Image 1 (cartoon, one colour):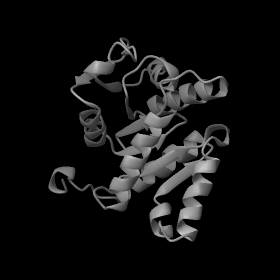
Image 2: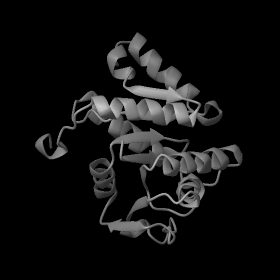
Image 3: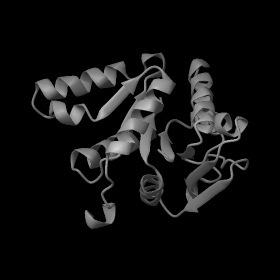
Image 4: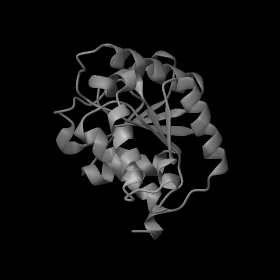
Amino acid sequence: MKSVCIFCGAGISKNSIYQEKARRLGNIIAEKNILLVYGGASIGLMGSVADGALEKGGMVHGILPDFLFKKEVGHSGIQNLEIVDSMHTRKKRMYEISDAFIILPGGIGTMDEFFEIFTWSQLELHDKPIGIYNINNYYNKLLNFLESSTTDGFLTQDVLQKINVEIDPILLINKLNELTNKNRNINLEEKF
């Protein structure tokens, strides 16, 4: 795995554990010499994960729509801040650059990113691994909902198993790395 995309919130959590764990994940990504791809902001968990990677000498590629540049406060300390024309272009570029995806806590924007990349996987538009770093059991209710969707027949168990959930960031990175080495990439351009 040469690069990993992090989807996470730009908001500041009331519980500092989220920022601490996001920063530690950034440290680990840098220590493993993996390019960190993320939303480009300097605030919230986005800023924490980027700062964590930078602390350990890691390479960071941020992708930020021009209309959010001022609102999300683009990170001026990263090696590459790519400004794009739309949210759709942002997600597409994140997909193109990344070998795998990790979802950290966040709000509706993070949910949008997670569900889009998960949907693309279900539709076999890609086979890049998806991980959830379940800090402080943040995603337990969502995971319960997805499990109930399989019970009700709206989601199959094999699709649900495409999500790799861990509370330990090193285990998650190692698992995604193993899966990346097994999977082949499918060109999104051929599917849209």
